[in-house]
Length: 487
Ligand SMILES: [Ca+2]
Ligand SMILES: [Ca+2]
Ligand SMILES: [Ca+2]
Image (cartoon, rainbow, N blue to C red; front, side):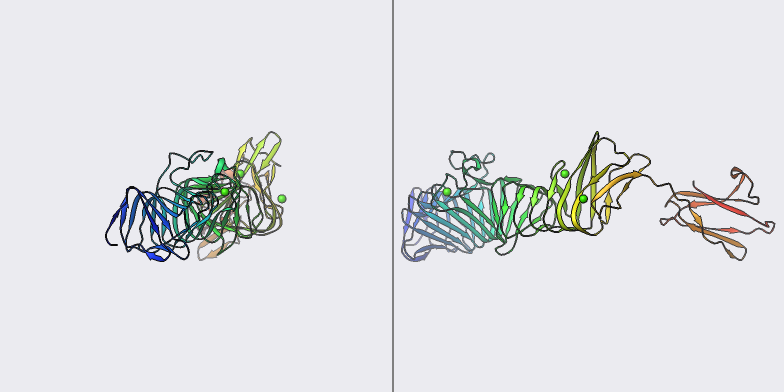
């Protein structure tokens, strides 16, 4: 059959062979795919499909759809597995799929259906009014549903997907486990984030995160448990400029890498064994991490919001910014703390911010507990202290404490041995406060009161506290005394 097909009701494909779609299909209706046995519909761009309602893969009878480069279907929904006991499978190796309403994998009961995204793009373009409320209400637009009355398995090994959110285990327990496997490619989520049905109360789901990127085109949150599998590497969580907040337990043998300039906020006691690498932006943790943690140059780590103890179990390597808060309320001194560290490699910047009452001599804050410390912070940004006080950081990389101490008396500048060059006397020395003004005073009689000494030179101490002046030696002067004063 040749020519374009207009579908304003429902068109069934019922084939037992693998066949390429060669008729353009468009209209307001549905297309149902039935390909029992070894059959499959292949979309490779030979013809295109643009329909307003549902493309159902596995409708009443098993169905299989293969989407390849060149294909550009635009459909209201893709439903995989429809009518009780009917299974469907979609394999997308390439092409660009546009879903204008929503997508369901494992739609009807008694089926386990799948979608494998290996390449191309999957775009669920609809934007619901707000974060989806999946508490016994109908499915909503903009969402990838993995398991509704049936079971859904969505696996991504490549390509780019985008949706307002993913909802797993939409209507509760089914025979198999609703599963999202990320092993490659990029999946960007919007405000609905990652949810489970019945307001996150449904629990028969698995979120397996390996190599690949879970991103954000808007800020999103999830309370769901996730497994960091390490399959094809550690998962990348790319916040872009947004915030991703995860408060379900993250477990498994893998690790995670935080990229993007925004904020990744982790809450809870996470047990994943792999590394946590902060490559860009801010990682804020409230709770515990089991594996080693590294903060790369330009990236930021902060324990929680407010005064929080971050419990680690392995090494902490700091090369970026570490932001710690301290607080004084009456006699009570509290601070953010990082404890349980094996070896803490210090580098980059330690930034400490203070709230509460004014600090006083003797106030001490224990910021870190580590078995061993290595290196030192390149830069310390500590709270300003009242006049006459200073920070004693001598134990910072010994036992993790900083303490308020009395300011050291200023040390006076001192002259080096004078040098004669012809009829000039060169007076130089060290020990001044860098940048401060100084004056050199002179007198013939050491007993003269200082106020009567003659100013013979002035200047500013160098960045290293040094100074130097060349003074002419006058014939009538048999002996001459010099003193340097500042200012
Ligand atoms: Ca389920
Ligand atoms: Ca904090
Ligand atoms: Ca300590």
